[in-house]
Length: 401
Image (cartoon, rainbow, N blue to C red; front, side):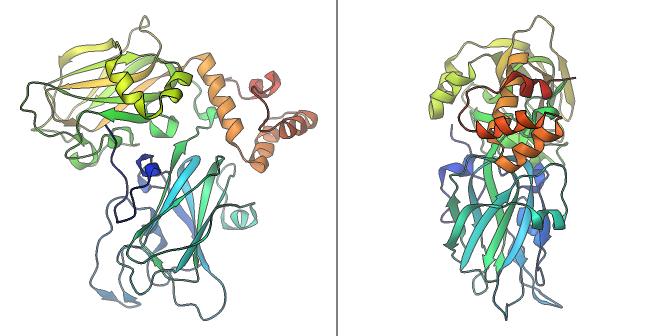
């Protein structure tokens, strides 16, 4: 089943919009700098949920649910810088000018950079920025969609509006590329921030299954996944791809806030599919997974409303790459966690994918900070983009301690 788009508007049917919004506040994104937000606060750019129409006027003028700069009386442009909640490869952006009709920017451009740690405005101003979207026309009151072909991993994205105006939301859709230094030991391998992905589901009538993988507890039933009421005798299900081949220790099935519509029973199963095979299946992956044989990790059992259930997984359980959660017969739950560790081979693959995706300046910084000798760093930079595997001394620098 195709997953729901994260945007709304007449031009928001681009294929990339089914990918997570890496800039969303729900995933930890934030607007860390802007040269001007005289009329409307820059923070609104990454807020989740639909844009709200506003009718009132404040001290500085019309109130908008979005970011709006003052009218320019000199040459130049305005910009806002977003720290991605999940660094990754950007596949496309949506510049949503909902409700901005006479004050939208006629053109936009988007740049990106990659930095270690948490740079401030001065460091970001001095950073090396790469163009993701060249200066392009934009429409008012529209979800303007722009594809991105660059396939490097970025941590910050800058939206530039030419010359000024207002933007309601800025969505940055892409795939997470996890820093493997955050994957040491036992982690939640289903979390989007660690590389987990929602693959498919049986139904998403009331709310999206993407919510299951969001960080933190749900604040209401609306922040979970809820299906329509079944009348056919079947059951609902959701499939999640883990960060890689994993040995799981426990699974959390949280029905928080689901009181009169929690499932009566649940079963959690796992399967293993070679990552290369999964990539080759493309859009047919969900159909393939639904037909596969699944190994029960949590046998079918009753569950309770408004309860964070934690199910231990025995040491004899198989290595898995995907989880299937069957709920009986229907209903919803708030969060899914899958705690465990990547296999050694999967961890090495995560290191290699991360290094492959780093822009040159960030790669040099990472390798230097890891304590590698200068000839090794120079050699790695020269071979960037041409190697199949990284040298053993580079991989060893990021091995778990």
